[in-house]
Length: 242
Ligand code: SF4
Image (cartoon, rainbow, N blue to C red; front, side):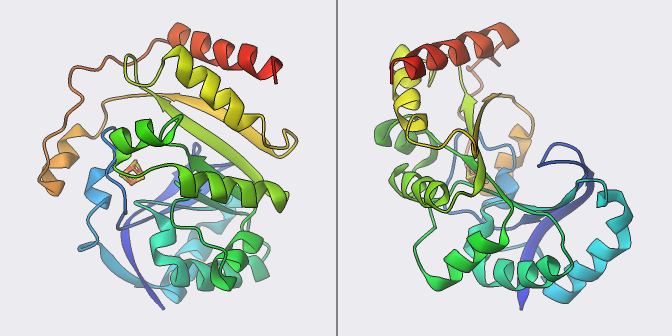
């Protein structure tokens, strides 16, 4: 089985617990306005690598990951190459490797293949593209309905998951966004779910040249730590009412 690989990061401290080997897979079914990896969106391109080559490369660095680290699949959207993900995780799980997938969850369906991927994954980091369908469509050209179904499935399976939400001042930081997010979050078992607000940043804007689409968010300010804190406090206040 082969995959189209955008890039590999062998020493990441931000894509899951501990130090991680991060495999960025090529191709995404969304086009988020704030994407900082836009050159991973096109399905064409990327390096072709086999499952065996990735496992061998992971082994090369595995001493880094022994203390609570592991492998993270990111992208692009890793679940676009679900057959590859399944085969890779079957092999790595046999060795007891901690597995994590960063996804937006829109491609999940209750098929045996996807269900087995979920069973082999220790942690999901799921990016929620909006507080409602309309907002998500505006941000990413894709709604959140499928992502919500995926989160419901993870919750039902008692999987660990982190929901992330990229905060863009004036675009998705309304009172209504906080209240709708609280309604969504209130449905999940808090012992398995974590929620993080990620401040929008402008890294990687030049990568949009690869997609051939102009970057549209030059006018959006990066939020201050106080703005992030304030938005989180609003969500917390709404959550207490549930
Ligand atoms: S889902 Fe992720 S990789 Fe795909 S366009 Fe959005 S931010 Fe970029």
